[in-house]
Length: 126
Image (cartoon, rainbow, N blue to C red; front, side, top):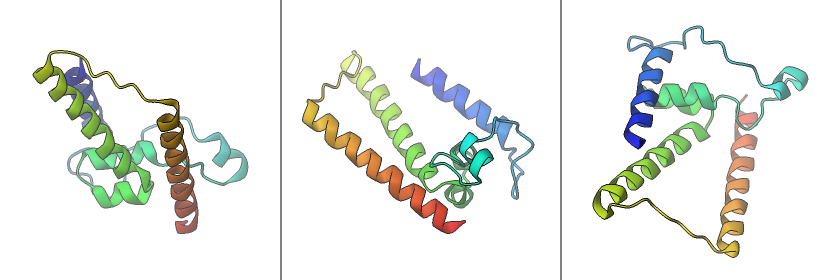
């Protein structure tokens, strides 16, 4: 199932950003961000879709310029998918992760701080 998801992702990324592209993404229509449409301020997630497409094609600088979280999230997703696939192949069972409430709160706090820092940085760069 994971291999199918990765294959579909890479196929879609190839459709979104052609191999000979170097300047801009082709005309892909996605709903625009409501916060940006109403206030002109981009939300913390603005640019993640384009950044992910750029990253998957090997254009890491463009991905970073779209949203600084794009490379971080893509590398994290690839690591988790790889770990889950290897664990499944070697152990023959699904990955089960049980977190204590204290660890869960720390992870949520860390994710919130990372998101806030990235948003502030993205706003400062514009």
